[in-house]
Length: 249
Length: 379
Image 1: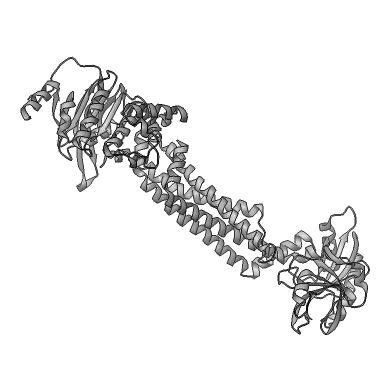
Image 2 (image 1 turned 45 degrees about the vertical axis):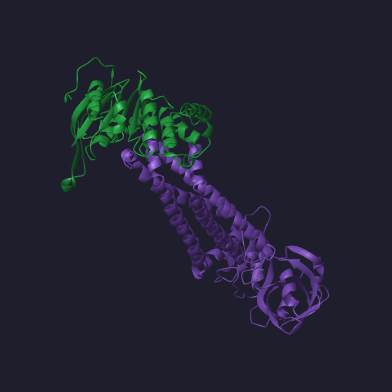
């Protein structure tokens, strides 16, 4: 297995991270989470970030999403340089271009599925009726059209994650960021969720980045970045991944 | 997003009820106590509405309308001689004892009116002819006197009935309606000379001189002229009301007592609402973080929290004021405790509720503005 990224013809770069460092705390409690990380992903890719707990993969995901300030280095997402972007502009950028899928789903329990899914559209200024119509259509696409007026607590974990996917896709963002999307799900449901995400990543305009611990997801990836101790340990392309899976099957 | 913010608020039933309940209780306490206080204050100046005159002339050391220091009878003529005074009449007012049929003594507020003009007469005659007040031993009594002095009678005291004031007979020739006074004594009206017969004899008996300015002159200017020329104290109705209320503020614990309760209501409102709202924000912090990650700005989240805080504030205020109004309707027929719900009280309570809501929302806004969006990525 190659430890060096292979040079090959790739679609346009969606995310480029160069020499990013991030430190939490100060003094004796200081922890360096990212130690000069370089990371790159292209449109049309499903890119996994893997590694042991505490290796910095969630921190990397957070800085790429613009939800966490970093100390040094450059980040460019979908052609926009995030360095020095004011908070309001960063929030607007996230709202327009990024869809989020969280490990704990983070659906608002007091709202029904349509309302939950319509949130990104409402945040983007779409009117209530149009947002809810669109939300119902996306729920239909993930197979939950008949439960549009249910509350999240009425659904299984897999169904809730499908709602989260619908919410992440409803405003048609170009970058989907997922944090452990299958870790709270059984293997069959996790497989279904990964199939949906892989389908999303097949669009040449989009790219999906997934932070995961779950080896069952590796087979869906176009690229895997393995992190260790705040650094990128290796990057595997599609061929490397197939080789790896064949070896470890 | 605003409709979703309201839905999130209302859907958390326990917190919503707690928030609305806290604000309703605070509003009720502040409005009701303020209303009773206003009512009590109005009782302190009821003499001026029951015996109407533009200028009230009293002994120079009198501080408020419920206090009397006797003047000489000749002072009436001194006031009449002041330029600008249209007319001036004597008025006797004192607390005396009246005996009910059951033998019990009841305090009454005896008012002696100038017999020729009957100036200072009761504002609202229920039954009887005021002219008959000039007959020997004739009195007009108010409805409270009917209630109090009817003890021991088969039927309520009425026209033609008699009772005793200071062991002298008083015959009822009419019933009137008055505003209740601060000490709660019923009013009994008679003529000035008759009143002097009922009252224990003293060297000076004149309590108040009621005066009117000549047409076209301001009461306040004439009052100042009376003071200059007679050395007596002359006040217009607004001046005497203000002096009386000032006296109550300075010399009794009543305002402090009511103010303490009103402040307690405010503090309870802040404590309950701010704590509950903050706990509501904490419980929703993860969702607020998710909204922030999805592109909600701090300013939008602040507006959502303000909307939620003001929504519970409005509902709580409405319930509190509604309950206060019910209290007002309940006590109105009884006449006590005194109660006045005016726009000033509603405005002050409304402002207090707004302050409480702002404070509660501010705590949440501070928390949310410092919220690191990356919280949503932590398990």
